[in-house]
Length: 167
Image: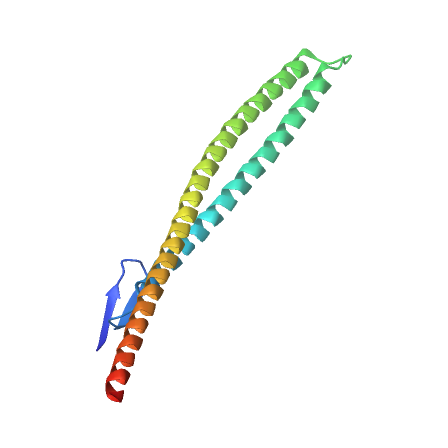
């Protein structure tokens, strides 16, 4: 018996056409596996972007801290003939640099926290995909066992029919 119907799975862009009633469950689960793989790939891309953002911000922070240290070292060297106003400007600039460093550290911490959240999301997607793969493997084993059982039953019936016809 052939059935020609379309069923919406709820996923955007996915439509499953069922042409036979006896579509194996393991085959139907391949769509779910494909969706899980796509989700995992998206999570992996997000993780890579989060890691890159953290690394860039960390490099920027290191550069700012190095510049601050160099500037402070330069200020601490004795200079003759420097006005009080120039010293005050230098100290004010150094204070601004310290503020930038603190802001950059806070931003880096936020990016690291985000990276941890994105990593957890990827791990969940990865685990979900693995679980679906295990489920499909189990379904295939079960289907194979049922097929073998049915095949053996048919062979036994054919043997019985052959034995009856020889009598």
